Image (cartoon, rainbow, N blue to C red; front, side):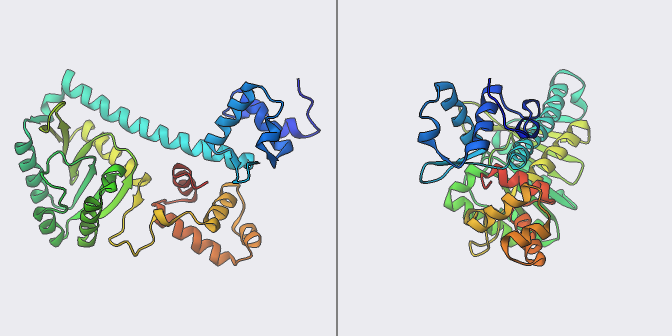
Length: 328
């Protein structure tokens, strides 16, 4: 049993931490001793302590610098980062659960009235184009893979035509797609043509929603290059698909038309990381300005730029996005 200095136990109750007791004990020890060299900290430690430290380093609650010295992030910052990650995961789980529930109902319940299955890639591709041609206000999409395209060319002529008549396009692309330089260039061409685009690491499916009354889910066939599609009409399932899209749209990072525009890959700078650390620690703009030696207006401008860069509508969402990217 460890003997705590006055005030330490009350400042860090185990029940308030999302950690196992062993990990929490190591975290408390580091709060009292850090910064400390890792070799020194583990010199007389058990294998359980080493494993607990590895978990803290992975989670970001503890940072090891290039000299091998351990530094502890402020508890509030570490916990808020943990909470932000859980909120994002919960949002994704709720949205996916709603979608899967709708799909289950469509197959096993009363879904025949609002779901139609289209067999084969060629028929699905033609319907994909027809829905865009008939859309009146907006097209939204989750782009997971080129299941319906023989090339990665984006946008297609039907999208150019739709954009020219004022149709709004919003699309979230899976991160792996943009690892291909040709695909990234094609997406930037779509953005230059008027599409609003964002990127998210992993998407659960490929789909397109037109206006508020049609949805198309693409279903790739296992073991081949063919695909089918599910056309969804107005229903609770379509509402769930719409909510699913909006979740990933809020979480996605913007894609710009040119490489000259500031992008997430250019970040985080040391100044950005310091600013984010102060924000997640709960400091006011005035306190942050004093710490960084800049004006309140400059703090506000930098925070606004980061929110735009990461597609965050609030400072809390900014914390979620920064945490997801490992910027904190």
